Structure formats: structure tokens, C-alpha cells
Image (cartoon, rainbow, N blue to C red; front, side):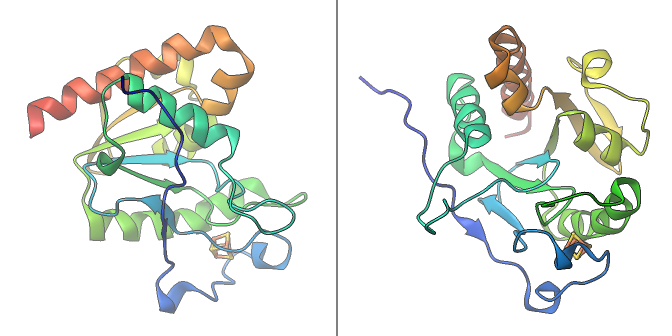
Length: 191
Ligand code: SF4
């Protein structure tokens, strides 16, 4: 019987001309830059707030809780991992305090460049930070938007709870799964 097992998504390497990005100053205290994970040609682009750890303290590869829960929900919704590409509003994970609004406004330009290049069929924003940044409205919340698609930055977009929130609050997991199923059924209409 087929059962779910989390896998390490392959990292999409950062373009050479972006590797030394210092545009927002986060390079001084953030993690290394991560451009994205999964299949860059995938029809579904998932947007998170920032990258999670891909290595433990000793530098060994690890699959963080966010990815484990996200992969599980995708698997249960019938979405193949090759249909998914994951990227972030911030390409570095902040390690201490920073100017959130300013930094997100600067770094999101990398995401717009990715969209131009990759042209996904559907976008799924996970968590309030990704939603507010991608929708350009700090008042919006997943709670009020989930269950529908919106035309955002030229792309058909929907939203769901952050996988880490669904991991910490198991009552949110069925809602995350429901939203992944919505994405799966919409994708079926497009392929
Ligand atoms: S967070 Fe984004 S904009 Fe800031 S230095 Fe890193 S890649 Fe550049």
C-alpha cells in the first residue's frame, strides 16, 4: 500500500546575478539565500513567508515541520510533488529583528521576477504574512479569504493556513487539506 513519506524537495539554485543580493540589508543577519524548492516548471506555485531550515546545526539535510505538514496535505489532496514549486516572500530567513514591512516590499520583487519567468497556472499563499504581502494589504487574513480564488498580480490565487499553524493546532489541518483539495480540483480543470 502506498503511504506518505516526506521527502527533501530539491533546491532551486539562486540565479548567479542575484546570489549576492544586499538590497534590503537582511544579508547581514539572515540565513543564506534560498530561491525556491521543488519543480520550477510546476503548475502550482506555493508562497510562504520565508525559507525554513534545510540543514540541522551540523549541516545535515533535514525536512522541517512546515514542509512535512505541507507535503502530507498535498499528498492527501492527490497533488504530486512534481506539480509543486515552493518559494517565499523573503528569500532569507531572518535571524533577529528587522523592518518587516520595508524588507518584504523590497524582496517581493524577486518573487515578481520568478512569476514572469515561471508563469504558474495557480498560486497558493500560505499564512497571513504571505497573503498580506502578495495581496498588498496588511488587513487581510487567511480566515476571511480561504475557499475562493482571486486574480492577484495577474495570477489565479488562493490562500490557506500556514502548515506550521496547522501542525501546532490540529483543528486547522482539515481546513488546510480542504484548501489543498480546492487547488487540486482547480488544477484538474487546467490540465
Ligand atoms: S532578503 Fe531578499 S532583498 Fe533582502 S538581501 Fe536577501 S534576497 Fe536581497
